Length: 402
Image 1 (cartoon, rainbow, N blue to C red):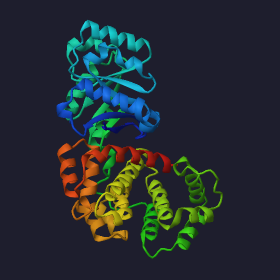
Image 2 (image 1 turned 90 degrees about the horizontal axis):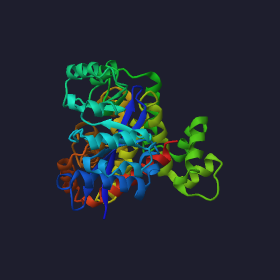
Image 3 (image 1 turned 30 degrees about the vertical axis):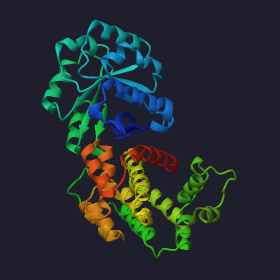
Image 4 (image 1 turned 45 degrees about the vertical axis):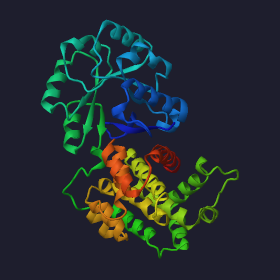
């Protein structure tokens, strides 16, 4: 039976990846609404740590996972590595003496404890004293309320995590309040919404991106682009010799690498490197997310009548975060890139024949079940394929981001 899980990045104040929260998605026959919290958590733990392997799921970064009262009392967290697990005590777990005792035991054994969707109540004091991280949901509590709560908790040694941070303003406010960690979609949006000027170095990269994307650009021209850039050549050789290709014999020349990959793959490689260069001053997770989206869009396309357009639909996912990388509008970017009308319409307006692919991937990221089902119906796809495609897309991103 397939279990569907997803991950949401947790960043630090420098917008660097700190951890992931692992989220339960359901199975072919069940959904979040029909599964208990106990079943959801045990399914996530089993899939992440036992079936897939946490190195594949999170790159061995810490994972925040929800725990119910029953699972805590069973001491289930103790079965998993303390360096890779952050125990999220759900907001509906009462701070009874038996819960306090088990949390004390876990804490003394080196586990990190976080209190989820925190709203202050005096009865929570014994649990607060054991916590390492307090999570505030910005959709549940106002900034003023959070500020008063943090002041009240100042006698404790705590770190604060802001959930559902959706704008740069909210990010800036929570940084000012002393938050350490941040979770949400703020880094997927332009921080300087009204700024239309783009750094000249990035304009050059965009122009190169456009050049590589043109159908008329030959393999010889792409080889010239690579050989004139030492960094690009180095990354190509690392890429071609990575575990993703399962090669026995090492490739040690650009010409050999290009011959091995072929035109489509070498074009895609240059695009991936250029996207990474465009986002050098952004969270690394932004590029990783773009690559995951690209691969998942491509895999979805291969299962539809658009299979012959899978490379173009790969670009749909890859380019979907260019506005955030460049702090400008998607319209401005598309003006400079040689893109087909279906690709432009999907990126700018979320319309046209390619748009269901991007809407499906975005809905899957956000746990938007109705959005997923609508897009799946439009593409005539079975929901059962999503989890495996998502896991393959994560593997692809980890392999190609060098």
